[in-house]
Length: 615
Image (tube, rainbow, N blue to C red; front, side, top):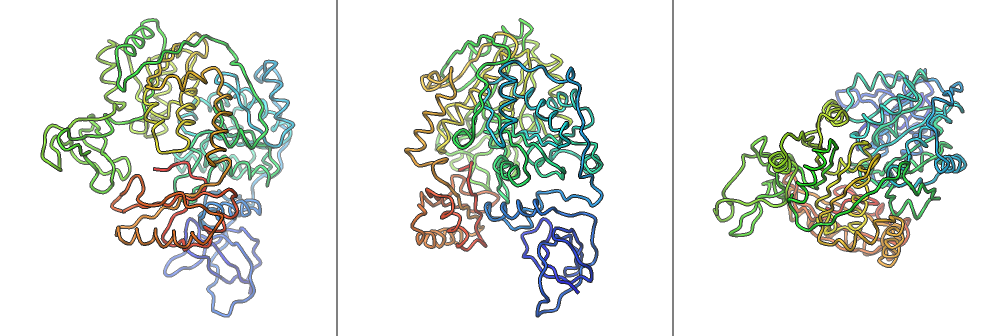
């Protein structure tokens, strides 16, 4: 009899020891009895016979995790403070029958995109580096370079992963990749049905599918002989998981590249400070088609006549427009003019968003809904007022002012399925709708030649966030949204802000902003010149949550190299009826911070290492 420690699939439960008559390799997926049921588990270690009695492994499947998958999962588990099982559950196991060697598969030269001299130079440089940052202005043709490198991987008998920050990008990218790679490419993301995922995995196992593109979960598909990982829009916070394990897909991609001997290409028009600082930079300075962009800066916080006139002009000229604002729903809050109180969710300490179309108020944290109110719950004053315009109200205002315009609402309230996403983008691409109006989803790399107007609202709200990256986030957003227009012809960019001087300084050169911002971050001792971690405490009993926070702070004070930047109630004090506290930590070096966090009692706290969200 042999004995094995197994980790339970998708569980934070402790690993247990089981017996088996047969020899099992580490990483094998098995079924084991637990209480009155059977659980799927992964063999993680062979051990000598324990002193206690053990149950037997019930069955052994054809699925297995490779040595490299287990090594990477161990890193994720230790660095991002999750169980090994939770980290392994990110990966999809290989099958014993999977193809591991691929014959060379070339694409005819005439079938590949023709690279300009600047693109060819960048392509050659990327082929000679194990990892690098492709810093290319919007419209400089980064996708053509990606396609050329993926084609080279096929020639070498290797596979590729192409990451995008949002599934909103997948329909357009799928179309472009299929032109060159046909059935060799598959799109992978969370909105796929079980049946579709099973079909893609069959294609990967048979060797028919050699390129997988999609959101961050695509990083963990079981591709053999991986030669390339591309992380497009690498600056985007969507690559950071907000539930345990709180991994950052960009950083895990770099680790995977080094473990598997695969090239890693990070790419962005507005690269993150850390990537620019850490990696070799290859630049694409000019757009593929150079067009004139005229910037207009206006004040205010609502849609005004300058915007409406511009939308009307571009609509009548047969062109398309794009409008960004940071809030979905009708308004962010309802508030009382008499007592100044905001109408809050009863379970979370946040204002409830008005959704007039559905005739309800909704909490965007716990999804609690209630009928629209007109009377203040604190003082009884009526009516309640609203703050900050949302997408639905913006659509109403524009529809009333610009007769006949068809508007595509592009936010998480309207784009709820992959089908709705595809249909919305098809309508816009065909010219059936003339204005794409939405939130952050708009900034993610959409490429439509007919957009000649970008309107950007809410930058001052982003600049005012309690986040050391607020300036970077606002500047990046401006460049990304402005970059969606003027791809083929001259464009107008309207920016609503009370601080035009800040943005105007860097309009011609994002790299100048990066250099200035890095100098500020170094002086202020923030990443990439220091490491941050955030501890989150949530409990139904506020006194208990406070005590856990203070006990954790006391323990952390023993670690001299770790600075407690601050602690107390979280900016959002309550979510889903749980009181929330947090502790922000900083250290000049990463290792002392990790060591300190591994020594505190982690049973009732959540640790977010390298956090990107401070709310």
